[in-house]
Length: 350
Image (cartoon, rainbow, N blue to C red; front, side, top):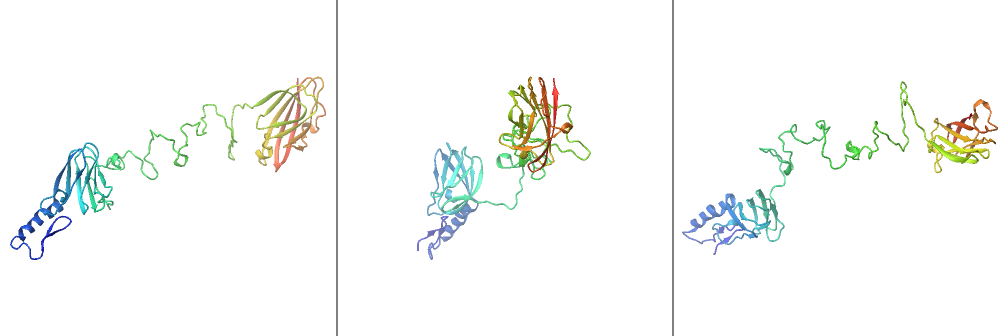
């Protein structure tokens, strides 16, 4: 019976064959074929192209049988190393200048980077990583950043923040995107972009700002306040909308032409009832230029509904002051839902 061969091309002597010479065959099997598969190393030389390794039916030395494949020569760019379609472990040392993909004819293979060594396993249909998990690992030197490490041998010397309270962070530089709010940042690259006012420069607030003091401290202390005044060459007459979100002082510079009603509101699209809460008050002023014939504020509204003011001195005015500026001040107090008390006063300036 003729000899047959295993996938590693170890000669399997047929029953009764090789009388008197079987020892030589067995020695070659053990000393050459098995030794190459277990501990052998062979050079594989590249010449700017794909290299294909094959196995033939002989137990003599064969490159593809060796455990370690030492890649040498000129790669001339990334190349492929085609290995036989058998199950086998390889230790590949890539001494070439480019990555070499170890594969068989049917698989995608594994790329071994230049100047690196890798354990790979040939499944017979593809070449894959031989090791994908380590329960523990101790390195003689620090794993560099380029390989996913820190480049340091201890957390104290690592140039990175640790997971947790981050008490080791003393500064951050070189951020290419703003740190988000939920990470402790502002979400913007400037204070203005984050809507954070700088206290030593002018700021404009477009939303409601609330300053809350304590039982032993006032809410706000300031040396002066500049209020917005709207000056308009308009004559007081009819129903005059007073938008409290636009100004604190409204000044009509043309002589009044008839008695008028003033309607206090937030704006044309927002009611005063909406922007004020119960228990809040607001003070506004309306300045009216008077001619030789004077007129006066005969009615007051809030959000279009009539309110009877409580006038200073106890009586509502019945006339204006000719050839002067009449100043009307109003303290508007919200006492409930759509309910207001208005304290009013008329003062002559001439």
